[in-house]
Image 1 (cartoon, rainbow, N blue to C red):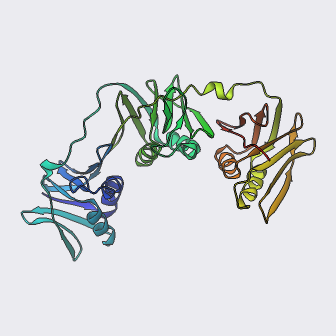
Image 2: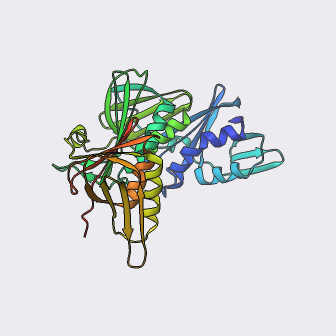
Image 3: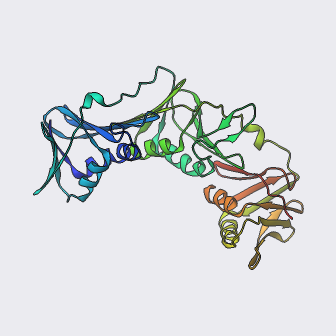
Length: 360
């Protein structure tokens, strides 16, 4: 194998596969598979839970493949100057050269690279990558950590980002059981889908396919995301996402309209106070009042708002700031029924639900 490729293109192609490989202890899983064929170079890695293959244009003198350490390859290429990088396979290993610099790294047998099974046919939807990126950014902060999905009853767990597509719209939902965010946009999509995807994979695919389309496929136990020069496969979550509409549908006893920017600034200042005490928000004819205190510090701030009826609620300060930060610019419409029931904020195409904190 002899192949020449731009350093920047190689770094782009290596980024996600090397990230997967670097976290592995088993020798073959800690490697990336490099394949040169036609007029392109592909870099692939998998950890038996997810697989990523990225393709980049290259000049291939001799086709072939090599299996090398992802950690070593990434460090070598990052250390090189701008220009063309040549990768060549020999009986003694792999040489990586750029300009006058040349590195040698050992290579394992590519036949020992564990293949990741391709998903069977299933639900498929095509969506614009840029629209997907904006929605993932809005709701991914509310997702539970991997393996720590919030219980939704009957032994189910809620993990990842729920992707719902069809009838010209795309909606994403993220939740950890204490906060829930839904973001929606109208898109020219094809197909229908309701499936939960890992947030990191959606973010990676949207970034890799920026300006183009991402094809999402769900087939029982596997998920796949494809774009130009990019393929990523992962095992599907075993739990079912709950129907979320019911959490946002209720008759409010108090409604509020407030500017997002002033509310966000006040929430961020409240989050500066250390400790776990909630931020207390009072609603009355004068507007909204944010107050929070610890053993030694306290804050209070009032902002103008249109309030339908007096009310008070306690919320986690950091969650409130994060939720306001993901909402669209302009006015935020707030709905609530009781200090111990869901607190819902809406702005533009994004809506966020926070569970209140009992106030002492």
